[in-house]
Amino acid sequence: MAWVDNSDLRLTPERPYTYFTMELYDQSNGIRGGGGLGVLAADTRRVAEQLDVPFVLLTPFYPLEQHQIRKTEAASNSDSVMDFELENVFLKVHPSTNGFEHIGDTHVATKFDDHIKIEIWQKKMGSTQLLTIYDPNFRELYADEGNSNHRLYQEVAMGFAGTEALKIAGLQSNVIQLNETACFFAALARLDDLVSNGMHIFEALKYVRDHTLYTNHTLVQAAEASFTRTQFAEFVLPNIKSKSVARWTMAQFPDSDGHVKYADTDKLTTQTEAPLQLSSITLELSGRKSGVSKLHAKVANYHDLDGNKIHFDAVTNGIDVATWTMPETLKLYHDMDLLTKYNLPSHDYLDKLPELNNEKIWAQKKIGRELLIKALADRQIHIPEDAIVFNFKRRFVDYKRPWLAFTDPERLRKILVASNAYYILAGRVHTGDTSMMDRLNKIIDIVNSDEELKKRVFYLADYDEKTAYALSVGSDVAINNPIVGLEACGTSWEKDIMNLQILISTEDGGVADITTPGAYMKIEGSDEAAEVQSLYQHMEHSCHLLRTEELAGYLQGQIAAYLPTISGARMLRDYIQLLSK
Image (cartoon, rainbow, N blue to C red; front, side):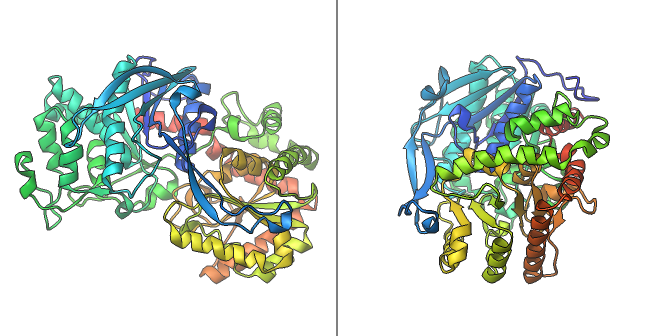
């Protein structure tokens, strides 16, 4: 690992870096996740392959793939593309059709069925591999509520069957990374395996903690799932072989006053049903904890079972630059010696950046626009080649505020018409999020009530990797306006910067890693009304830049500030160095 400095972590093909995630979004390998968490997992594996790092990603292969499509199809002309309703449909999928090899079976148990068959499927790619566990009864990703029995079953199966999958594949983890608390049961299964094979529980606890990293993507501990003693008794304990591990596990539950006390696993039915937050027990088994941006690690408000605030190290999310940067643009960066062969910034990239002039930028943007026009045409949307395109592409949840640009429709219309500009929204509303669906419908109503906006604003249903890529390479301005303090990191904006877009953003998530004035167009204001005005001013300014010779200098400043942050190789290097401590 010549690209990593000061690392004592010795990774080998037999003892790899092992990454557990309940979600993977990797359509090239036949697995469609729900959003950014899954995309990040796919990027991490791809970067490991490019860097020749021994790396195994473990994830469920869900038999149902969710799509969000238009219930009422719009007419074929662009004036009608906002006239629709959304519905969720599910397609049946199986690992056998996506290049995976069936390498064996294992089982998990519940109180209701002590032998549930779990299939293990493997796919090798260079120094890395995907190991997936499959049960036709898994249903879809994020089925039911976060604290439901079914979600607990999915997570327990991932942890215990995933640990067995490593053995079946002839592997033993060097370190394990838990991508969110839902992967906690992988650490618990490892603890149980060590104790069952003769290690004293206190020694095993130290070993697991020393070799486990928990990466958190959620700012508030209260948002994490919690489960009751009864649920653990019915779905977790049947998979634990060691009685001492079972006792340790149940001892983490609080009593009715919220205090932790020793629990006798033989008298579970007489215990209080005070739930256990999964984050609390995950913190107990993870020796290292990381947030996904500097701001996130600083403000994450998590406490251990004794009430002590937990320290998080910061490892800001990065992207697989090779996947998300248009090939022609990536070649330009390498030809200019801005990037090394590892897609890390070169030692003198700041000296080279002034060579990125308007002629080179517009040559790349022309290619990207052609790709976007084609992708939009497939959805019956047609935009002029010389138009300015704003994009808002991210998961549709309240704190990301997709409606912000529509607060003053008249002002938005004037901006779009004056600059021959278009505004594209792309993002999925989670099943059951009625509040966000109402917000989306209000945006649609605003657009449909204005003849000019109907021509210039489009919402793309069934948002996927293909759509995300097209918008990254073919748009001009990225809109990122979460409520400050609520975005853990975000990576869509990183893809946009790499593809020569102007970034308009609040100072939140990974954007806040850089405080250099002018690094991006910062949305500011003492309240939302002021932020809206700031957003509109930046939209007008970005249109001005895109029509003048000033564009090159502005984009040079963005890239100078963010190129080190964006690199997925930097992210993986930071994880390896953190695990080497």
